[in-house]
Image (tube, rainbow, N blue to C red; front, side, top):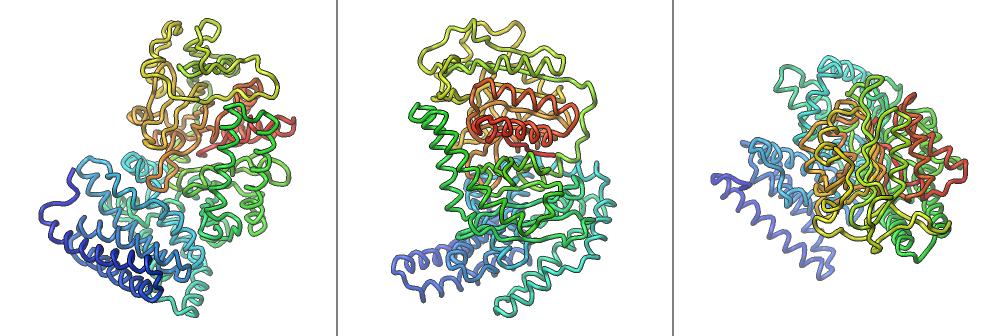
Length: 625
């Protein structure tokens, strides 16, 4: 697929040549450690970035200029962020990148093609650093706009088309106008403070708060006719976050780890009597700390899986990790915003913060999900979609399925789990291979009679041989993988207990392992019944994969894009133990009377109160409404 038309090539060569010259100077300045040369490069790349931006706005939109602008703005952002002295330029560069990306995305959408990997790779880390920089500039709205423009690119086509439908479903443009009227009545205190701060610091060369506020209001006012409606939805400065807050009744909090500290950016519903956008400092949630915490947790599970440590050591490590995450996130957040104790909240973790147990880390000694009404969403756009779907009808179709074997080890308790969950809902489960009748390889067998300190995990210790699962006998009559794929689009409540395979190198190849591989890319070809609740009692399928670009790309994001209202999944491997069966059964008993997040939160709170080890419940997270 060609990125540029023939008529654009000359413009592209000119733009890229200018960028490459500056990039060479930047590398030379870094090699010599010359601060004066680095400052000169910083100013020159800024000037080139602004020239390209003016060209893009003045002339006929060009993918060539947009691609050059993305590369140049990224370099400008990197240089400014590394000095930590000009956060205004960081935010502006992030905004220009998002704008250019939107134009290129529109080009590929017209061609019916996904964005190329080399374009998406340029956006890695941009949403996170832009959000953090916006907090430092006291203009949180700017960081949220950039984040919303970037965090759904890999699922862009499906998300965009569904968002248009959702806009109509929640009252369409008249509803947006009402929100806009409420917005205009607010004092915009943060914008005034930002202007004063930027003038004092003599860094207001772009009038950034004014520009972003004007763009924000222009988007709201673009409300006549279908073309303007589509522009409102697909603009890189779209206000998905505000519409999501209005539709769901939840306050959104974007979590942005920064270079030396982190930030929380808050979006309030228009009728909350608070400033619509706020931000708060998270002093100990820097990106280095986030990465170290994730590595500690992963190492603990790897050691437990290989037998280096037992259950007691894993429990100790997880408790310490939960406490550290709480100290870095919940403690400063609730100190600044104590009203969150009584506020329905949706957390939007950016970048690697999506791998932290924000949902279950303790608040006042209890898991946050059991004390607060909180959920996790991949983006404001995903929350908007989820909240637009109706609650499933009483007595709707329930699908419960289990596969305890996939060529790399048994997870036998998935079968009694499926039967117990099915009994709660009065249906028959689809069981692919009962462990009592399966001839099991001793290669990776997880013995269900293990001692108390051993940790049998629902995880793949190694990739199964090609075709191994499909060759296994004793599949239950009529329970074919093809049949279950068809049932996924018919059920309003789905529970899957099985192995899962999360592919960081190719996220859309991540698979559910039910009878055979069911890749995410194949599932995305279908739609779920609108408003479906999905429970994934499988290893790590609530986690994220890949590094393109900053979105929480994985099964929860995909299922929400497919029509789910609520998704429950685990960030880490799930122990294949009776306590896991009990937790899932307790969650399903709660689903008959409350939302997915309240049902899971209360089940986790009870498990914690009963002394159940955190390995059982700490990784489970609720996504969506």
